Length: 327
Image 1: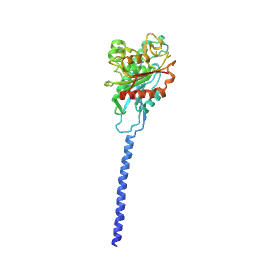
Image 2 (image 1 turned 30 degrees about the vertical axis):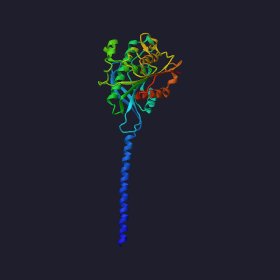
Image 3 (image 1 turned 135 degrees about the horizontal axis):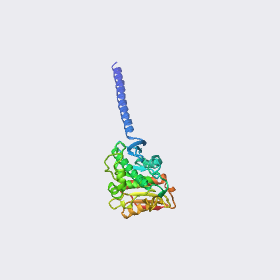
Image 4 (image 1 turned 90 degrees about the horizontal axis):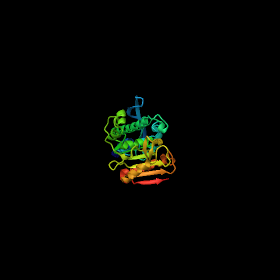
């Protein structure tokens, strides 16, 4: 009888220990599942985020939108460099969706990417026969909108996992011009050179968001764009830049000239920008398509964006090098 009771006690003890370890195992697995759900956040796109409201060419308020591409996180507190990317369209047409392929590649390369819409405004279509004053205003508004988008991203850095130490900008055609000009233009420059634009449209940093502008652009992707004044690139203000351009571009000069060959609208293209940065020993990559037009066919997203990502990563690691390649 005593032996039987001992055996019964042993069996009960074994069941109890088994249940205890099972419960501990289940708790442990549950914790692992929760951690995985928090940490392994899938890459995604947040569409149509309003970054500002500004006045359009008719005097009406216009909601300005971003699409934000988020790379996959592999740790809870992981943050990423950010790229503001801007579509082209000659200040007349275009949409942030035009550069979604560029943004997907950059996001896959470890960047938060924000595609921005901006105010259109140049309603003419034929060079000097158009309203060049309206063109200048459209360019100025584009820079205002890019500045507003950057201030918005700064304000929402924690929400979108942005590392504010590494802010980049880029674009195609008119979008590249906005990227370049917004990286170099200041309110003091505009008040000195174009007081009429400042009086008519306000300061570069005013419209949309009254936020601090204490960010710094660390690198630029210029896809067949131009800067309005190459003298803005100085030894005190030179930004590493990767450029792509066709040598037979008839819309934006590959070196220096005029927008749409109109003598009223100066434009300094990729070759000029590259030459200026080289003289200042600032990292700069220039990729030219011999005989290429606007845009150059050889530099689609699948070619240009991995090279851009590599150049930006090189800036972050201090290993960016200059190069000039003609294809």
